[in-house]
Image (cartoon, rainbow, N blue to C red; front, side, top):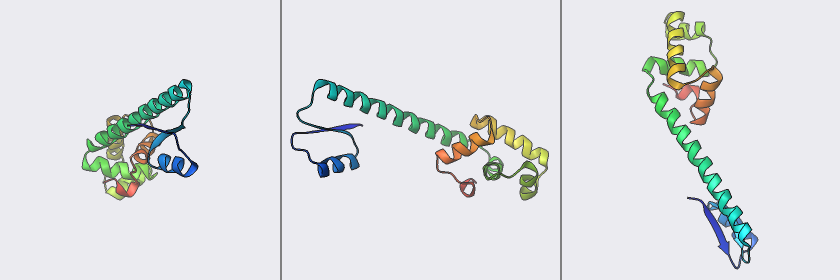
Length: 132
């Protein structure tokens, strides 16, 4: 929940502490209606952006959770930049099998490129070593 800190006796250290504690704005009295309305609008917009980011992150986690164990392995190598032939060698499977797994990964994660996969992994704090 966004917080707008309003005070009649504010100073710089108090402002800094309020912002570090999560306040989205700090209004010293007296303030006019426009300042308060701008602060409220800004707080609402920031909250909506944070909610959207949270929803998108959870959606990515949920989609990654649908991958099979083998798809997780292929994903780990794919986001690390390994080509299909190298992934096949590392996993001791056929290159065509890797292509099938990558295709399913792309579909399940709704990604259009490996770059999308990397961005999704970064978004949820997932490194190639953590995917398994």
